[in-house]
Length: 388
Image 1: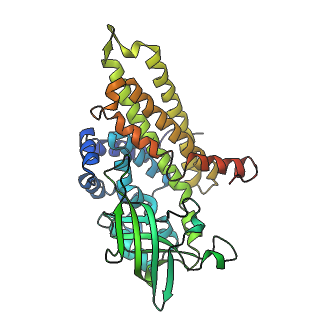
Image 2: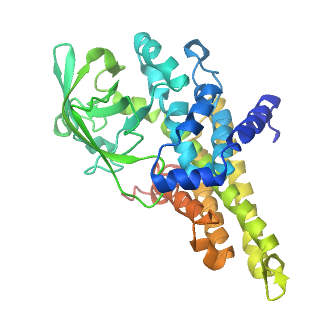
Image 3: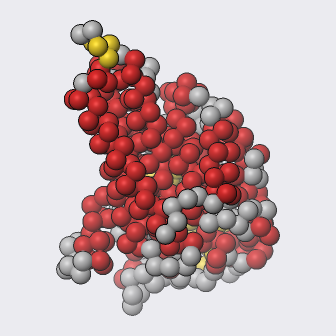
């Protein structure tokens, strides 16, 4: 069992750390407060070729694995960029996996090189207000009309829709009540986000405000058949291919935020003096931070196992879900303790830990809740009855 990063992986870690470090925490404070997309940061990483880390070489990428992608996003989050930085590039790095595996050669040639070079922003349109995590219950419908589809419906919590030119859109092409199996009749498209047919409305939210989350109201959007990913009716199967890697990447981002928060807390505890002594001398401060360090380290080991399994073609659902659960818990706990270490100043924006707290909290909800992870482990690993 080898716990060392390869030379290439270590190089990726160091290079990303150096590049992300050029954007200090004040940059992220200002972008978050202004609700402004971090264009300079995104463009810098696109220019460096990092957006194509998992895209096959024939489309301009590097063809590396989810392990390398997780190292990249962990370092981005740990730099102080948090979820704002990670979310600006998350979908470009791995969200196109269903297109890479199931899309036509023409669709891949038309879109992937532009995603790699950063000129094409794409959002992911799956979630709906009436369905939530029960994806089979979505009602956005694509009706075939000759060589095109006409789409009507509504999506919610769509990240980067304001910046995106295209959307990876999951629809129904057969109504739920008309399918023999509930996962049938779902069709996936990668198509233009036509503003004349799609009304995009940003959602006011508690954090990660440099990257928007949006509601989409779709009214007679026309999609050419060439924009369909794979076969009609098999979209649910296609998006399943990306679920475990997505959980690993969010786990890596949660881990990075936890590291950033712990770094801030340790710095403050070493500098702040109360009652004639540095507060880091007090076990009431020191023990929680040390405990968070231990939990972050343990969670990272599970994440590394999960990504190794995936990259080696091994079953990894148990480890992917466990990594997401443990990294989200450890990251949020570290952010919470960092805020507590700062006392009243932790509640201000000046010391950054309040932002880490808000963004770490997101990882316990997205891309699925901690409770849904436990549902999976209970049913599929422990063999307990389905609980929902």
